[in-house]
Image (cartoon, rainbow, N blue to C red; front, side, top):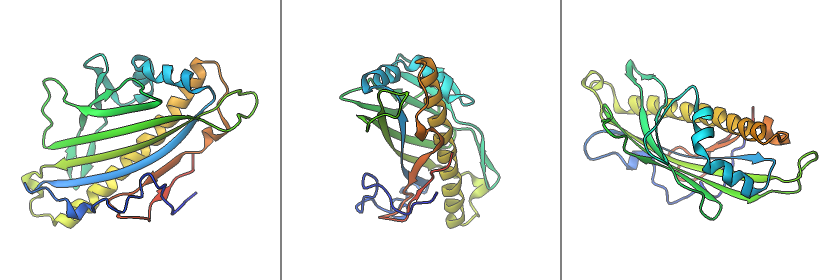
Length: 231
């Protein structure tokens, strides 16, 4: 299902376009703004306690991505190996999972001790908001809606092997790859978190489980985003 309307939370007309934010050091800057939602067949306090117990669900649900604990709330995450025009990179990013605060759960980038990213920098900020949903469908007795949004920026310091490639081609190729990666990872992670939560609490999956709600607003000033309602 394709929906050309972007939720107001990410359709910000003041957001500068990507081409207006090229770094002064000549690196290639890719930015994306994403949003999605998932339902949990439980009250928000139960969902909040589950999210705060990230030592269990984060490692299980992130697989096959590699996860390494680096602090009580921090993890080093290896997303996978990707290639753009023959240039390969295996990004690793540090993420800090903050404790739930007023029904808001945040994940932000942190440095990974002893690791220097080889030619790239990642800036990741995700927010999940928990709110009581509409009346649950039996056999579920409660429903919590989890709305999430993600601001992602990747700055790539271009290697010499790509110095002769037009910047417009590099940017369009990078945009497509990063957008595809975020879409695939969000779809897989959303599904696995729902499965893990409901299985661990012996609860039925909600009806919305088979639909994946995902919006992207890649460097646009307003409008023109896409929604993916497919499983």
